[in-house]
Amino acid sequence: MLGKFSYHNPTKLYFGEDALEYLNEELPKYGNTVQLIYGGGSIKKNGLYDEVVAILKKNGKTVVDDGGVMPNPTVDKLREGVRIARENKVDLLLAVGGGSCCDYAKAVSVSVNCDEDPWDKYYIRFEEPDCEIVPVGCVLTMAGTGSEMNGGSVITNHEQKLKIGHVFGDEVMPKFSILNPKYTMSLPKRQMVAGIYDIFNHICEQYFSGEDDNTSDYIAEALMKSVVNSSLVAIENPEDYEARSNIMWAATWALNTLIAKGK
Image (cartoon, rainbow, N blue to C red):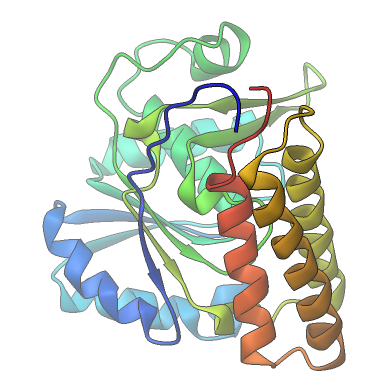
């Protein structure tokens, strides 16, 4: 394995069918007000919203809703989230959804206490935060981007016709992420398939980077095999827990653990 690298990932993962229960262990570490971030409302239809809110209230938290996060979250939505966080003086940003919700939460986290325009500072000038950062936690409902365990945050500016990603440092990574494969079972088939392609392509990005004989290659080959095998099972039976768990773990592992060659 050629080259040098430094690897550190501070995000704590809770994985499995009862993973949401560990939210009770994490919440006491943070202040009273939680900004609950989610997308178009599917978590209200499948009951996850009520489960999360019940745990938040059980722990004495004040819940501030921030729904409507769209795929490829926009800078206008970012500014709305920052306004909500500032007005309510939130102590924790809890993203319940897929990669877009996680991305958005991280963008809000570095912008709440920023005295400049966050789009210009983070996405045009690519500066790092020099203000207090609001901590982020994630409850993942769609596997694909790996945003639940990294500092990446992609924001879209339609006016400028730009979609830009900024990979922030360790301090912006989610403090914890909850991964229950069952939460992915209510996804429409097309979204599940899109996530699978996303995972496979990200593995390939690592696999085809550089030319040295790299240990990460062999891990990547195993992950690709696992994704292919598990996806075939999941397409036939979307409620196959083992297949769903393999897909979810492959996404997290591939995007946040593989060391790219030649980097």
